[in-house]
Length: 190
Length: 190
DNA sequence: GGAACTTCCTAAAGACTTTAGGCAAATCGA
DNA sequence: TCGATTTGCCTAAAGTCTTTAGGAAGTTCC
Image 1 (cartoon, each protein chain N blue to C red):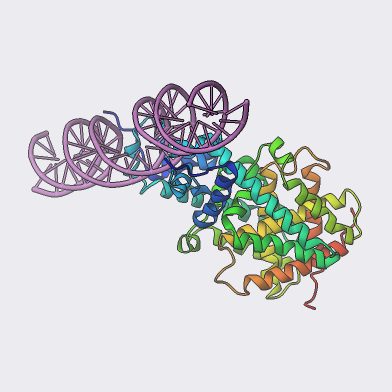
Image 2: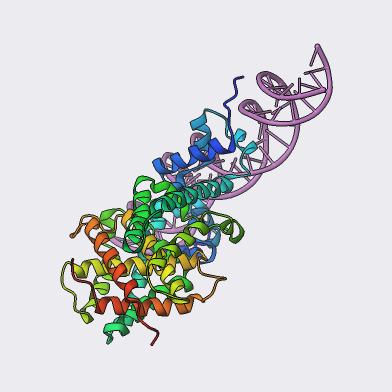
């Protein structure tokens, strides 16, 4: 009996690839076992259960996203940083739709607190250093940016903006212009 | 044998309630059958399949959302309209998380084209009548608003903003102020 | 009342999840 | 290097959900 060499690491990585190919919610222990030419039960030595698999894929995706964002932000500031960060989000979602969906998978609070999601939030805040916002407006702005990026990418991925003019790329560019303008002219509290 | 009086209508309605109680992706034909105290196979006279059920719940949610939005927008314009529309989204998602998730369920293009999603898009565009935007900026703005509302509500529902200051309500208010300001001062194309 | 239709049923097959228990391969101590 | 222990993958089995096929009881309408 030749061993397949399963590890949690390899399973999660393969699960992420599977997610990109067939969609995050089509990722099942069975499909993963088939991919390794192994019986399903064998996975349960490496994964607590099916939910555990999905959570780990989500954590992987968040790490990747944070790494790319950190890389993209290095040496940039202001609108340059804003655009670079935004494009990391959008490009990642387009290149890895399954992983991106995974990154949006709800995590319980403790898991979330230990995830790379925290790093992403810090990076978002770092972008705002190029703009003149102080608390609590900075937090409001962080939340706005998170909402726009996530919202746009998620609507775009769902096909919301396809087959209608103007094309999505143009809206994306103009929305980034608009956000930059907004951050430079953040309205004072009435 | 007493009949249960199943109809597609009643099943979809019960499915929507079930979604709010246990989450949209926990809505199964089996669970629905249990709720009606009926055998699962009986549902298949009224629903093509499980996917059909989910699609119908999604369409119901979109209708409800569009109805509420239309009602909220009646007689309002400008920032007043913007806030009313945004709150419909947010309140609906908080009151009916399962239905809201359903409303975000991907539909194939033809189904989407025949859904109340179209009405929602028209209403979003109507809000912009209170601002001085012409094409194609109006379309960009529609997409921005859709992204923010969807993004914010979805992050909030996932618990993204809880347990951190300032509280979510305050961010929401300030973000609406910011969007109003942005729409009034939409940057010209460079 | 009977024909035609509708509603719900039983039965069954296929897919996914998860646990229990077992044999064989890899690893490690002496 | 050999025996013991640990680890990896297996078979088996039970439970859940989906979907189809075909049948019997209720409803409708002439």
